[in-house]
Image 1 (tube, rainbow, N blue to C red):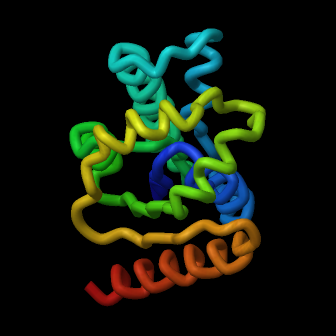
Image 2 (cartoon, rainbow, N blue to C red; image 1 turned 90 degrees about the vertical axis):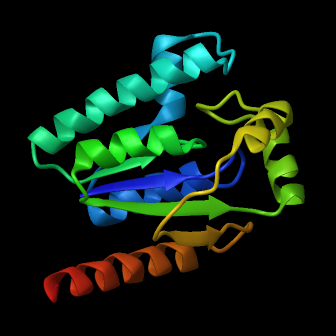
Length: 168
């Protein structure tokens, strides 16, 4: 199963996704880490973003061939990007969108983060380009102290999804 965790910079998606991957014992791919491996100095240009997603897609295909569960952590801000991963997963994919209030995001993006160089300007740029997710997904609202609740909701969502699939 492939789980895509999407959201704007500063939404809390990486904080959630890394913990969720550990909880469900899935492999974890973070776009910020992929970006740093490819581009030590990030510009967040369209060309750079395309290279990051292409590399993530190749790593996803490898996980699928190895029949591993995988949590992907990136903005996934365009439908075209999401479709590439949906096609690769052949339908065995779950979307979780992480969101937060803009004031919370602004505060978070002022802090130095280990892997991400995204600042509030990057947030505003990606927000302008954001294409809403289509179809079924779980939306989690991230605050300062609700990670346990987010993890529980995500586990419940996966269980519900798997229960429904068993009866189809």
